[in-house]
Length: 319
Image (cartoon, rainbow, N blue to C red; front, side):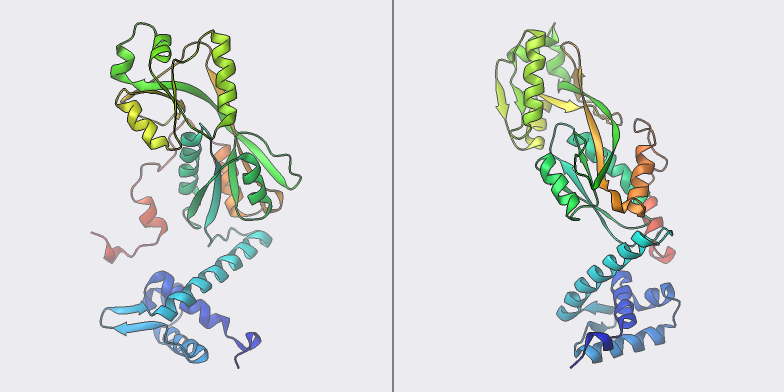
């Protein structure tokens, strides 16, 4: 029986690199090994597991069903290993994917823009996944339990193990199609006569908007509700409704007009993370982005070659 203490983890790591690079030759180069040496290590791994991990054909290697399963576990093992080294080392390690939780709110567009910029900073170290968090408390719980690396919320956490920094304050505006906006003399009459699209889940926004309308001594004639932002935006672009958006300074949407009916109201966004993880490259890059100017287009933001470069794509694969 194969015991854990007798298992050769170097052979598993070699297999992982072959799978990750989709090439034995490229994996050997990355590991500074001869291809023949890595091939022998793969053979020994298969023998120790009693499995065939790759189909070997004229077009190279491809996973068997067992190989696919082993690779999934290997990837998880070595990503956790990378996290461990990153956590305890002063060196910038990376080698793992980051999981970001974004609180469901009117600021969703701005939050995803911020996370998109974060990708550019973290791309040399790994990928960035996102998930929607239905409310602040859920986000805090998932951060505390280690299910997420960092998150974006409308308020600071009170949890003793979490840190936060303010990303910025963003203006929330009404918006509608240009044709609809140009049809009215007074923007207030747009709200008074055209349905206002709101989501079902943002109670904070509902309360803020209710107070806002009281202050402006007006109210919308009709409110439509939807869980689907894209649905509301499609209606808005076609002049069927008005909606609320946090203004993204990098948004060049030309078909929508953003407007106010009085004093504009603003939302604040905060980045949240575990205090214990502040030494990790994932959080260092997050804080680097927070300290930059969000309203300015970052270096290489539109550079199509960035991902090719950080993925270390071989020149012979490119046109």
